[in-house]
Length: 461
Image 1 (cartoon, rainbow, N blue to C red):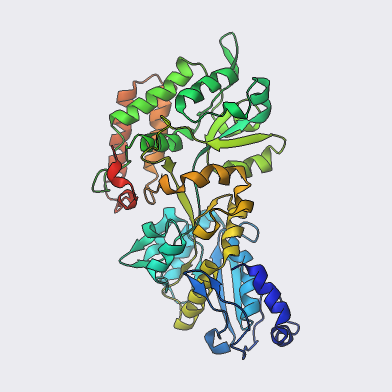
Image 2 (image 1 turned 180 degrees about the vertical axis):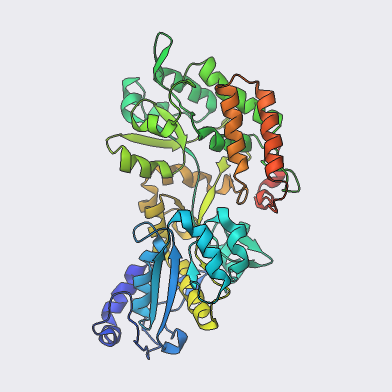
């Protein structure tokens, strides 16, 4: 059910506009709602929302919503108007807290009784906010029926948040450089062997000086791409218990060697060709890079003149791999378990409204440049018209989430890459040292991988 239908119904339902009178679009303090039957249709498929009821018995109530984002970058904020038009007695006040302060201030206010009833969550801070987040008052099976990745967030039959949208890595290519090399859409590679041949055609050298990279992984690109390369070959990131890193293995070494050969043998890139692959791509100096959806926002903001395309990351062969790559999701909001019973009830109602409403996910797709986790939208033509969404769509079932990984899994891997590519260390020694650092950093961690919740986990290496 789309919000446009609700808006239309609101236009027809005269009593609401009359009752609102001069109220603001986000609802106003002091307004009492006495009309339970709004004359509006129920939203949603399995997770449903029937707007024809009173919230907080129709009595005025105000709740806060904390976020590090604002309207236009946080889909929750953009949905507040629609909700408060239906329930004019409710005021939802967005409170913006800078990311740098958010994860310090939020746990402090959630401990007390005056914290926000609803708050933005990033799953990398799961352990920090989980103690203060209430369970959703929505059946777990209903969540799983509507949202592809909901199961990985369900513990003991309950969820505190799920993914609204997900993202993963793809290959971005410069269309101008592609055409200059005589390449067409027919040359888009699907295997890594095909990819390396294309990358060779895109690389340019002036003697021993690289002037154009065919493929650039300098900077922190390796810390993301190694995960996908390992998963493609059935190598998971953690041991069977899900508590110890499994970085020092033959697959990691093999994939590191593959990337090194791209640079040293195929000469498609160079460790001396800058240390920021995204900047190099934006400046038109690198023809291809591996990146997640955030790159599009960076290009739009900083490099608006670059004409680029996107294609799905290649795989070792034409066969379906264990997993195409890792994914991560943008979380739905949390509900404060320490808020008053009345505020929690409003929070629960608002969250159900979001999860049943297709337009919440559509807004998240647009603002966060990510693929819908909601099944009903995964074949939507408008969404699939976007190159990133089209690349992800066929692979959704074969993307794996390792959980909210400790940052050492990426920072230590980046160090290993730098030691091999820049400092001349051996692959074996660099990987071994990274493994040791990961183990040290995770020694007191209570992290448990979610990899075993992946549908094809038994097919692993």
